[in-house]
Length: 287
Image (cartoon, rainbow, N blue to C red; front, side, top):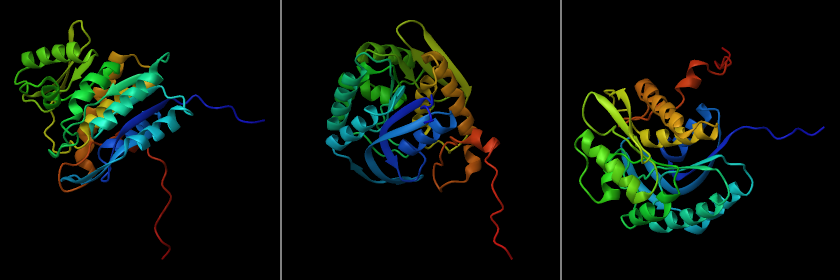
């Protein structure tokens, strides 16, 4: 008797590769795994980077990005998709048009993380791509997840310097991009890290104590991947956002213990797996 296909939830990340493993495709796939979700990937760009910065970026041609996307979507039953680093306007437009066509008649969640600048400060999205992301991709999104600086760029305004200003920008993004918004406050000030969710109704505040850590590499990638992963598992949007916030906070809390890199170390996406690790055999060589 042949084995029937399983019911493992599947999530897809469309993003850039981080050679140091702390952000991008690598962080997304770790996050999916930690949440019990099968992860597939479409690579949009290669980066030569580590915890100290980005040395080089090589964008993948839009046609090959679409070839990867078609290969995955024609075969796997993808329940949620997240986009991260899309590099340039040609890739943003190509991905948006293909996802718009795929979304017709489906209920696939789409989480758009408008990755523009790395944690190190290096630019990851060409200026001409901002309009394409705002006008073509964001309106397809189940959720848009900008940080404070990305929100300001999408709106063409100054970075919010207070919670009231951030709430106003979340509402402006909802109106401009025509999708629900989770405005992340991790780069803000104050004793608490406050994210703001706005879906056209009331603003929901998600609050966690701000952690004094430099191990923040990949934070935004992990958050958007966690939302996608939880939605792939059947969580409604607000529950997925709350769960993702808790997941990232715990990853930030334990990230320092990894001891990875000499700069801004990565979020610990696999903290849950480390609490119940696979039994490792005795790997010591015989004496």
